[in-house]
Image 1 (cartoon, rainbow, N blue to C red):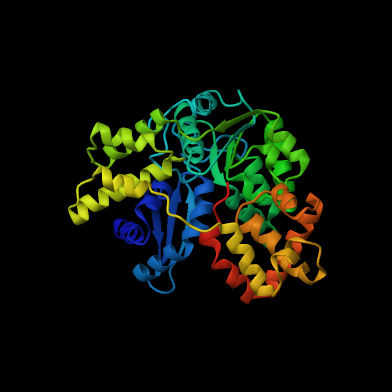
Image 2 (tube, helix red, strand yellow):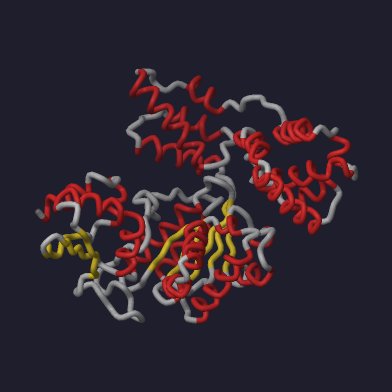
Length: 427
């Protein structure tokens, strides 16, 4: 029955989830119609109960009847006191980590040498650079390095409790804690049960003062205790519009490192590595041609390689320079900003001159424009202020007003959402 239960649960979750979260999951005993499972630590128990509780309940009832229940306990041999690390002899994963995101798999070049070296140093000597703030554009390897820090730290310091999360995870935990009147538990989770805290995509907490306040106090608690803090963002902390200055000053008090777009040699190494990983043998001149093009991030390169692999495996079409050139071609398109402004003018029946000017008639249209430019198209508040000839504080006010207008008018919000694939390009 034990193996049957585990097999049934395994069939209901993804392979990645099973390898990440169920690695220590086992049946401790069955008492009547109650199954008692065991895991390695309290964090994993909480995660499984919250994210997979319904799945486990369904399987248990299928196997033992509709009255069957379950409980997850922490194994005694893995359990420890609240103020002690969650694992003493072997590392326990507190977060889902991509197995490909290791230091060994990271291609180092001139554009990311400092970021790589600093990240590796932090993983071997936590607290050396604290906090560590890593920033750069989309697809340049920030998440790869962040998760590599987590994985290497677990390897070199198995007694430390390492947590990698996104800012969305942090925000959702705080909101859920407030909603359930259990904020003290969430605070304890992040402040007393973590030795290394890594938060990715911190920019998504812009204009969320309540969550920023919790992050501020969490930062102070961990930093004062000598715990390592790592943050990743798509921009330098000094450009985090909508963040409280006291939090920005703390981001800047440690080591701040940026990753630049890859140079040709790094693009070559990345293309070669991706091709080898996919079992695709590309001639040297193909790789050099791909590297010579101004591809601005690693994801773009990987996407091209995967498309070549797909054509080869599914259509029998071998890779050629023509195909690579076609994939690298930039399609002509209209200016997305102009397209959005034109759409908003049409929806509100105002002219572009009225929209960008001082006309009261275009007040609502102007507010929606500010919201769409910043939230949908990724513009900075300063850019919009320059475009409209207004102060930053005025633009911030208009953004909030625009958000309210869209909330009250779902039809209008739907029309703007149609533009998102075309305008969400900045940054």
